[in-house]
Image 1 (spheres, rainbow, N blue to C red):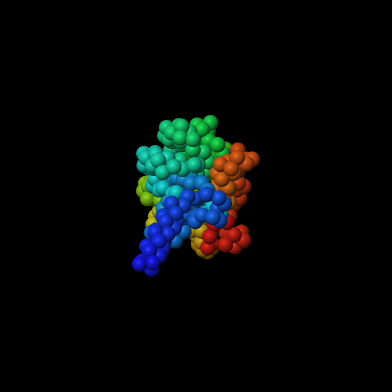
Image 2: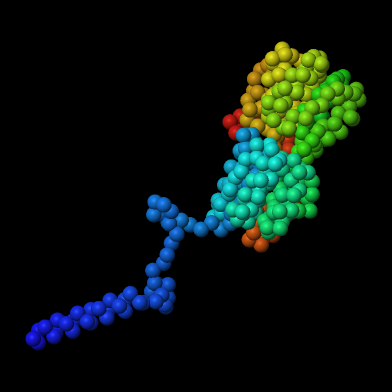
Length: 335
């Protein structure tokens, strides 16, 4: 009987001890309590990002914007933050809807190259209303008052140095076709700089044709093919970017025209490879650095969110790459 009472007493004590353990509250120092971590589907611990930053380039099939995004991502992720990238594919309506998506996804800032520098304005208003910081990169928006910072190249000078080079190569003047994109301010500035330069030539250049290419290869190819049929003895073609310049070269090759000379802007690996060829219509490219711009844009976004000092406007230098100096910059990547 005594043993039975002892056994019952021990059982009651055990139940009480278990109850106290189950009701224990998390009090005291962190070392006293278990720490909860977020985990992914595989059970691995997930780190919380410092900030979420959006990226909207003009066309993520363009090697230039692929490189720009990659450099931005590197800078953002180095600051323990996350980059969300959308591809508008040169469609301003798609860019607007994707920006709304990113706002809903909770972005803190956006690195933005507008497809259309005017049509982007309603999206800028929505970003501001949502408290999203705007870092405008590469090509400017029209309403710069919405922008917290701008990172780009000296686009006007990029066109100007192409014009200067043309005057040197063709001192007797000639006829010129311009492949542009009025909806992108970076290209507008390049063409303006080019035209200012050739206007100073002692023997004039006549712009006989100009076409809106939307900055795209296929559209540029179609436009320049038509221009070459009308002007088979064209002296030069000024292109708003290197992707358009590659299209122009393709068209002049098909037309069998080895006299016309072509200028681009970007300093892309594709154009630098063309410059290495012995027989080539590419005269040069006004080079910029999407790597430097992307790194600067990513760093600026984080600095703004951190409340640090930052530069409101940053302009990267441009310079001419031609057959004489292409080896200095290499052909496998961007400078």
